[in-house]
Image 1: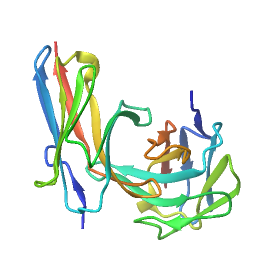
Image 2 (image 1 turned 45 degrees about the vertical axis):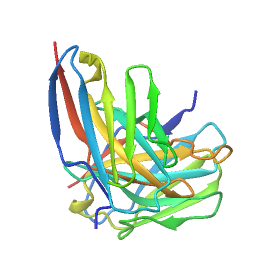
Image 3 (image 1 turned 180 degrees about the vertical axis):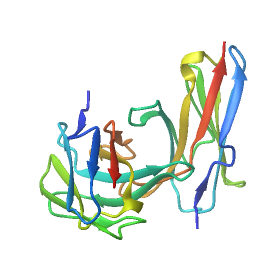
Length: 114
Length: 111
């Protein structure tokens, strides 16, 4: 079974802090994704990574950056946290071995920026 | 511009009846569609999918129908069970596994 682990379930940070959200997957998946989920807005893609050191902006990349130095780990960075980044953050991974594989999600990090 | 839309934020059905969740899309380049289910405090889990070259896919109690001319897909759950109560997301693939998700529909199945 695929396991996608997000380092924290709940996180509280202050405005202006640099925040790191970590995600690790154990299935050697090439693709990894970061989403945020807000009430009534579904899942919105922040960034995704095709493979190690490769990244592409999603639909809402402003205020975020990512890092993928190793295949199993994909980090989301809030450079200077703001209150409008309070949200549920979801990480996902996906294999490209067979076409149209679904994404596997972690359980999410609920981030509050005070 | 939202390319995948789930127009019903919520749906309530009686146990044993059929649940029908709907999804509309605007981009004819989407070639694969998926449904995910999400319980509170958990990440979404994959439920069922359909390729754009098919019009129906069935897996147990779950069936997905695709109407390409109408750019519409639907998820049918028969019979509905209380454990099916969750948020259901429709998603569409464009390329390299990049998905666009709908806003979700909260299904409540009453015993």
